[in-house]
Length: 139
Length: 139
Length: 139
Length: 139
Image (cartoon, rainbow over all chains, first blue to last red; front, top):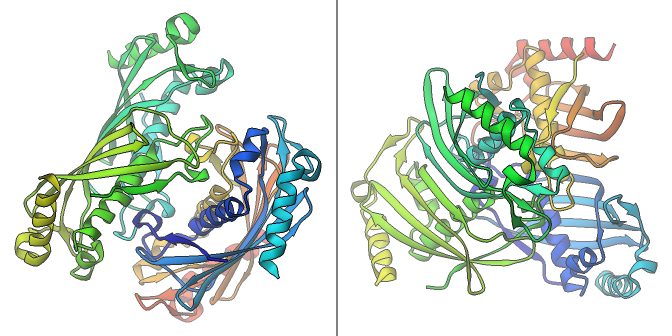
C-alpha cells in the first residue's frame, strides 16, 4: 500500500531546529485516519453513529531527527482488530531511512458517557470492511 | 488587576529559537479565560447552558521576540461588551518591555446550530457580572 | 494560480467541534511557504544564508466555522514586497464559501542577533524572483 | 515532592470534548523541565553549553479522559540517570484519580551535529546535582 506522506511544517519544529517529538504522535493520527479512509472506513462514519475512538496507549521510538520541509512516508499496519480493540503500528521513513517507529491502541466508545462498544455489533459493515482491508494489507 | 502569567514552554518555540507566533493567539485565549474566571464568569458557566463563544476576528503585533522559560505577563482589558459582542485587548510584557499587543472579537452562540444569542437575555446574571467587573477594571 | 490545500486534521479541532482558531494562523504559514516554493523562493534558501523571516503582525476574520476532514483552499497574494517588508493576504475557501480572510506582515533578519536586512541587497536573485512571480500573480 | 500542576487549556481539547492525547506528551516535557529546575538543573544551563536533550522514546497509557479547566498534578520520578541516558516516569492525577502514566527516555547531544555526550564528563556539577536530587526523591 502507498504510504501516507506528511510534509514537515515550520511550526512543527522547536528550538533544537528539529521536529518537536509530540508531532509524531499527531502524524500517527493523520496516517491512521488516512488508512481508515482507504479501507472505506472513514472516521466520520463512526462519528455519524455517535461513536468515537479514544487512544488507550501509545509508544514511539525516535530513531533519527527530522526537520522542516522534509517529506515523511508513514507506513501503517493493523496489528489487531476485533471490534473492541484496535492496535496499529507505524513506521516513518525519510527516503530509505527509518526515522520513527510507533504503536497506538484504541477502543470504541458511544455517546457523551463514552460507553465502550463492540463495532462487530454496532457497525458490522464497518467492522467487516476494516477486517478485510487490514487482512489484505498484511498478506 | 494582576496580570495573567504564561511561562513559555519548550514546545512553543520553533527553529528560529523563538516562540512560534501562533502561540500568542493561544495565550490570548488563556488570559481571556482567566479574566472571565476572575470576573465570576467562568467559561464553563456558558458551556453548561450550551453556549459557546467563537472568535470572530483577531489581530496581533509582535514587538519583541520571546523564548523558552520566560515569564510573560498578560494584561487583559474589555474594550466593548454588550451581550452580543465581546471585544478584548491584550498587552503582553516581559518585565518592563511590551512584547505583543493584540485584540480579539467574539460573539455568543447556542447549540449545535450555533445560533447567535444575546447574553443579556440568555444569561442576565453572567452578563451583569461581566459588565460590572470590566467597568471596574477600566476605571 | 492553484491554491494551497489544507485538509483539516482531527487534532486541529476543539471542544466546540470546530477548528481551533489558532490553526488558521498556522495554515497561513503553510500556504505562504508553499507560495514562496512555487515562486522559486524556497524558505530554506533564506535559512542557508542565516536569514529568517519573523512575523511582524497578523490579522484574521473567521467568517464560517470549519471542521475535521474538510479541504480548505488557500489563495495567497503578495500585497507588498520591497526586500525589507513582505505583506501577504490570504483567502481561505471551502468550495464556493469564503471561510477566512487574513493578512500577515514580515521582515527579514540575519544571524542570532536578528539584524534587519534588505533582501534586495542580501539576496538579489531571490528578491528578483519573488518580485517577478508576485507581479505575475496579481495581473 | 510537590507535583507540577498543569491547568488544561481550551485549545488542548478536541472534538471528542476531551484533551487531545498528544498534549500529555507535551505536559511530560513541562513537568520534566520543572523537575530539572527544582533539582538546580535548569534546562537552560545545558543550552548554554550548546547541549540539548532529545527524546529517544516515549510511552503513555491514557487511563481516564480529562478536559478543559481541570488541574492535573504531575508526579515525576527519575528511573535512571547515568550521564548518558535519562529515564523519567510520570504519573498524572486529577484529585485521587490517576489519569495517565508514561515514561520518556533521553540522551544528551552537543552542537549542530548532535554528537552524543556524557554529562558526567561534560557538566560534572550538573550531573552531580541531578543524581543527588533524584536520589533523594526516590527514597
